[in-house]
Length: 126
Length: 224
Image (cartoon, rainbow over all chains, first blue to last red; front, side):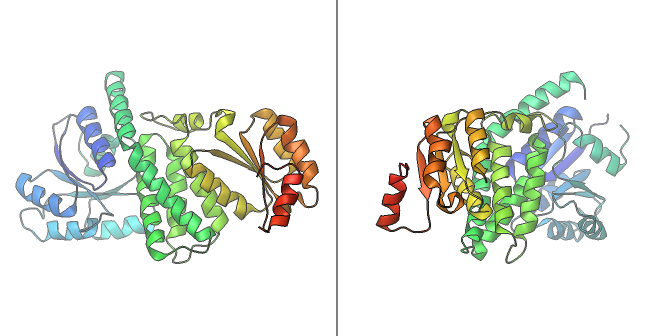
């Protein structure tokens, strides 16, 4: 599997840690992390990851606002974003996709298969 | 998933769960505060929102640590608390109680996929950690159950004397709380059959708090 570089923006420490460890261990991808939308935008500009995993509900700058900020910056506008959300309703997913996200992955996810879900949404060969 | 990758991943997830347990317990307590507030008619906007936020966190995270049913329970609670005035206080209290048992039951472990953790969380507790509540008032039963859980006591709410006796025979309890209204005019008989047979202390809960009522309950065999 090709080594990829992802940025994970998630405010909950335990979820962020599990996602990072699972992607590093299972897929051997490089995973940068940020605990808020503001920090995530900064990291995205600095590191230019191939893909961003973005939590929807966060205090401060939430997921949709973070995506808007990323899209408005020419340096980060082209980075695909996948939302992570506990809201599994179809209407929520449609709304999030309408904002320009590449896809939506619902929480809770299975740590042993999260990398497969990401690869499927991003259409990355395995 | 290959075995050489799954074992270290499971171990890492388990370790993260143990570190996160205090945070999870805090989230469960916020859900319980909202449920108790609603039961008592004292739910303010801040408590409701904190409960909703905590339920949202648990809905998204519990399943990651091997508690898929707890995630579903938390999602139901989140939806209920999304309303400015949540309906069905008794149901909310029951869900809050289930959430605690599913996530923080004495045998709950983490780091495994599926629902293996939840079946272990329901495993038997020692009698010293159990309380039996006999009442047909569902809201009262749920309120007592939430409060008991918050104190680390596993509550068992039953509606009939027969169910109470069966439970005592099957698993035992440290204390029995009898709703005087449920026992109707037969408090003495109920106390004798339900509790004294098994030598369990009894507390009788009554709406009237006067000295006369208290003395009557003590005469009927209650210890408090």
